[in-house]
Length: 474
Image (cartoon, rainbow, N blue to C red; front, side, top):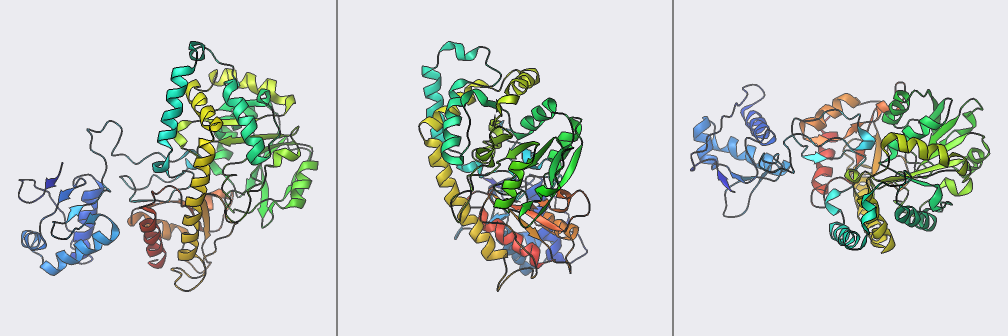
């Protein structure tokens, strides 16, 4: 429902700070009111003349503040209509599906700072797709089909490895699209990569190597599971597999698209990794999303007896589905299945059957193809706006990595600005992303990890411009 600030009896207390100029003080007071939900979406603001008279400011000061907040996306104007609060405020408490709290960080990036007190105006956090593009119609069709055709026994106990329908569909799909060599009997359906990592930690002994830089959260998962982690250095050719020794029991790697540098594992190093004697855990977190050529095939296809291949729907569909899979070597399928049984018995069944149906009807393939085109355009926009060349907002930044994935690593020049300074500026502008330095065990280089998939198609250009403004303003 539209709400009028002036004329409907609605009163709002604004504290305009004296320091820093009246216009800036009014802008910040209005930003806080929108972020806190005191000015909900659709609220009509008073005219510049009325607000100027009420606050004792000049009309030009109020008009300039309105213009700035329109440019930032907090306010919206239409010809012949009053200025309104744009669609950035927290949802009202009456909506049971929404919350005024910031959305939780995606599973891949749970170590993010808490961020603003309300949902970010520009969400560039890595590890999540554009959930507004979720294939809801295809999911609904598949759900209806499952509920109308599945026998009642599907609602009973399930094999800890998962429903055979999904395991069979995955075996065919992964062979066709990623070159994975497996069978339905060797697949275990999980709730995501974190559970897969926990299951592996339960069935092997000895230190586990993780890439450096790499997921700091995954290192913490292994530590809490009682496993020692050792660094596996990464350079421009990917993981330096020659540093692996016989004392290391397993290595967690991202061969198709290293996280976070974006480089694929060099062919010579893929051969060396195949010849190494330990267990390889392949995190194929966004293997489908390569934009300049055919995606690099899964490493598992070259050594299926020594590689645990792990994938999920978190970036292909949505993190909330909590559906993932492991293609396990024959020697480990028994222990892994038993560990899964004692972890949570089995993964939720109806979602498994719906995903199997999406794969069987090729709706999943169609969604991946459409998403690939959409994310490729976004990456090109990001490189054009932030990469080297005329008009770069912060000269000297580097954007390494191949044309793949849903995120970009932006490394800052040594001359500055500092990572903390830039993060503070981004937070001030309502931009949520994450720092790069925690991805190193020691003192890593300053930078940002930018997720370019999360915003909607409509919101992404504004988010990119806001980030460019933050870079230019530090």
